[in-house]
Image (tube, rainbow, N blue to C red):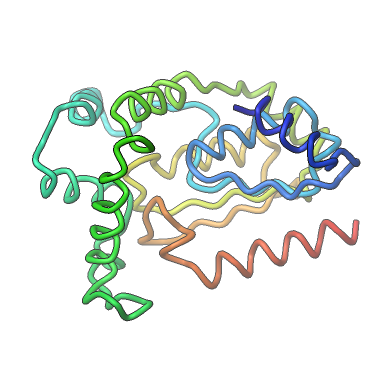
Amino acid sequence: MAKDAFELLDHLGWTSKRQLHVIGISMGGMIAQELAYQEPERIASLSLVSTAARLVNTVGFVENLRNRINLFIPKPIDVQLAEVKVRLFSDSWLALPDVDGAFPTNGDRFAAQEVKKRQDTEAFTRKGFICQAIAAGWHHKSPAQLKEIGDKVGRERIQVMHGTTDNMITVPHAEVLVRELGGEGSGVKRIIYEGRGHVLIMEERREFAKLIEDIVAKTEAL
């Protein structure tokens, strides 16, 4: 997938040094790490959001096994939606009034969007879901590879963002990223949101946008 991204960028002519501001969320953050590892000189800034260098068990063997099995067991749509909400969002955000005003709560809006998405049976398939889960599970960046990313991209160009109640990729994964990229003391920016879930771009929409604006402005000036 990183190769696909580079082929598209090359086609667009975005090939200069320090031209790419890369924002990777969840599995996208895994692809972003690969982009930075393969061609670090092209990266202007690297924002790794709700992602991991490699997936590890942080919740105990039994719960981890149960969670993985549950991903692939067919269930009624209402049960599926309830489980997805818990994995992706904090309870407090789900219960808040819909920020755009069209639904009673944020949770209701997400449920409506998810139902609409799943009605597109060509774009949203079980095969695609399984392949995504396998790809994420196979992703692995070693401490040495992360150090190389930090060295070659430049730690002042990197930020790691995560929520403490992320039930999809738990927050210890963010701490591993920060530490193995070189740590806060070396320039990596660590942003941890207390009580927020996996989808920070929705739960912290305005602040998320501001953080991206800030790192773009900072690195453009380097």
